[in-house]
Length: 200
Picture 1 (cartoon, rainbow, N blue to C red):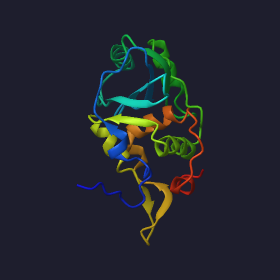
Picture 2: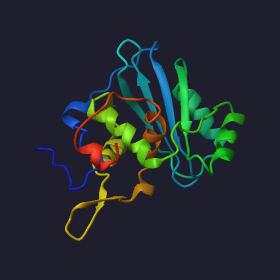
Picture 3: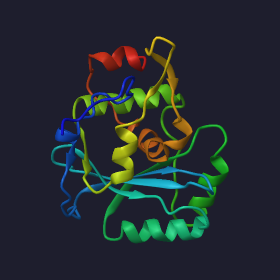
Picture 4: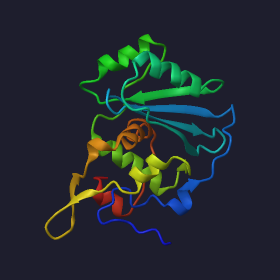
């Protein structure tokens, strides 16, 4: 059926017909970016490959193991996932309260940097710009990520108009991963609905 966009959808420029693709084997020569949302109850990670010839990004693996794993266990799993690849960046967590967990990962051989931008809205803005230019493709079997991407919305006011507040932002763990990592890349200037919706 036709894809219907909910009212107030944050990433209204993300088009599954264009941006969701079939899985293929990621070449070993491509660059790998890992993106992390911390938390003992709902840890998450997103692994993204970049074609160095075109600059195109591909979200190729989502990691949602649930509670109960240690930093060491996560780190070893990340090393296994990326074995044989060139991991060129690892980003995750907020600016102010998660330095300690970043240091813990570094101690286990998986150093994670804080995002370039501190402001959450600016992080989403940068990702929006990438999506508007269709710079990010998503493998079709990343079901949790696609579900979050196509449902994440602004809260609506009494007239059912979008506000500037995000609905259930704390539950969008894979989208948090994405904004921590992808907001470090600067898309070309993008015009359209998103310029007003997320503060460009």
